[in-house]
Image (tube, rainbow, N blue to C red):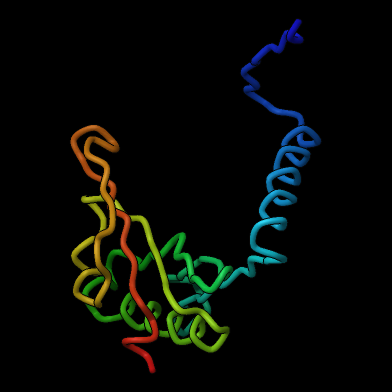
Length: 146
């Protein structure tokens, strides 16, 4: 006879349970691809008074740079700051051994910005959120920065 199992929804999960599940998946991944580590990458854009007016946050791991956030203060958009941050991040990723970069963005954000800089769409979700699209883009860094 099979043991009975119960699924429960945890609105505020116990951090020990979350850590346990994460560690089990990490252990499985290690058995397939060996040791790996993600390292954070953060670039800031500051004005003359050291106020943050833009930035890029992501992480590097498994030969890829993931861009999690790229933001520029609205009054500074269109002046090349986002492109500058992105290019510095890409070069740093290459310096750290990355071959590729990927990012997720929404139709109301900046898919054209990334495509203009050589990123290609490899997936999209319609109505995510409703009335919009979520795009998944990637770029081979060896072709553009070598």
